Length: 277
Image (cartoon, rainbow, N blue to C red; front, side, top):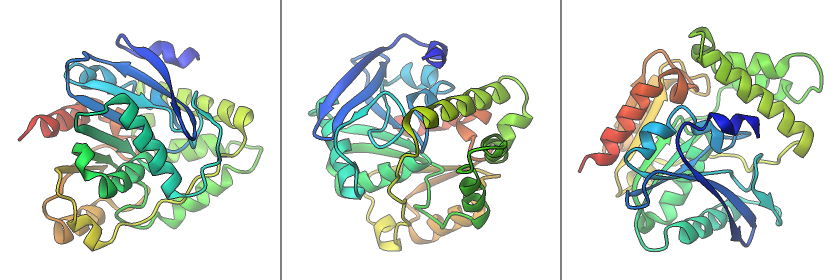
């Protein structure tokens, strides 16, 4: 894959056997460093983390996954039918990668929802949790996003490009290298859809107040101020009200593209959180 050449640090790759199939993982950083597992968003791969991996792997042993239920180099042998199938897959992967230590887990968008669901049932396996603009999880997804996403199912026109440019507006408007990163991700998405066809995704859900209050491990919730999925201020307001133990951060001049539109700021905030007591 041409885009993998942009991975900015040394890495090794592996295919892990699970009951659902083989899971592709990119591993970077020193093996003696604390483990950090990275889950990408929907219709994305481990390459999502290109803008962040140099900073993260300088202090952590990072494991960037290609999700078994989505595009990428993982090979699914069994249909993923429900949330439980996803969590069983993730638990098998984490057990294979880090059998004894507690794990730092981070997820972006749909990967953030998966990470939150795993944390609710397996808190004993986790040290800290980072949720980056998690899909649903806090609030319903906006009608505007649903409508624009549905248009990408139409097999002609420029709906894919228009959707990405709208969703990742801040990165596109920033010029280079943000727009190039968006264009490369868009090209990868189009190729993946031709190769794999539509990928059925288990719908994300909203966590109840009780679920948010049940988190005993440290949790960081980050969102871009111009997030299109749901209003950033409303999401932070809900968390501050129902679960004040959750750390929240609104990233300026960023939306759903916060990990690359404001990569340096986001990387620094993540590292500060992971390294705090």
